[in-house]
Image 1 (tube, protein in one colour):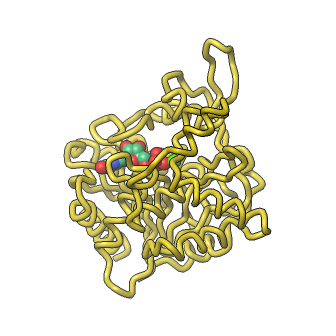
Image 2 (cartoon, helix red, strand yellow; image 1 turned 30 degrees about the horizontal axis):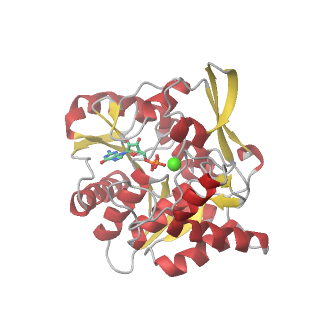
Length: 323
Ligand code: GDP
Ligand code: CA
């Protein structure tokens, strides 16, 4: 079986770890990762979502934090601070720095991001094929109005520095309109037996991947069933501030509204099936009314086994809607 999943950072990575545990040997998982969160810091190209997937599946993640390396030290950051060089608000540990140095060096030598990602994964052996959504530069920017007046900030400044404490007025994936899907992306969607949308952020993770011309069309036109899992449980994100970016695109923070936002494939949208958490069982009728087959099951990724069970349920729903 060939499974293709779109993914952001923590939510995507944790789901993929469960999916990997749920599939049979010989099944192939291709991940199309969000690169709209990418940022250049200290002259280095940092790809937070690709790295979260790579470290989580490769056993190098800081488990409680959900991002960055385990057993991390912070000497470089302290030295930068001693020079008065920031930003202080973005955490890059010493081990993590090595990843960004290797990536930046390879990019400078002329390799595309997809080839660099493959090279980094040769070390981490994530057990999935990890593709960036695009080799072209795409950067999510957020329009806000705060004490400094109306302005546009990089997504990381909005998320990490400002903790999404001010309203996002618009979310703009700068560069997406002229970006091309990375090699293998459209093929992985066309040739998949199942396409999955993990419980990643619908706006700044999945939404950014879909903003690359051709990718939304490839999901909508896939011969495989498309199944999504809700990142929203009980009217709130399980972790993070997804409500702030959902509001920016006019979507209410609920499992049903996110399903409607993706839309049913039968009416030009993306989904055949949608899983909501057991606590959102009352959303099932509304989602099904939108033409999307829906089930309420436990969606808390509290352990790899609990997550694997979510993945098995998603695959079973795929088989059901395909039949
Ligand atoms: P990010 O790039 O690190 O923000 O990660 P993603 O975009 O991949 O995932 C973020 C989303 O994961 C958030 O909106 C959370 O609500 C969701 N999430 C995190 N943990 C869980 C969980 O245990 N269950 C579900 N259903 N969603 C989760
Ligand atoms: Ca992210």
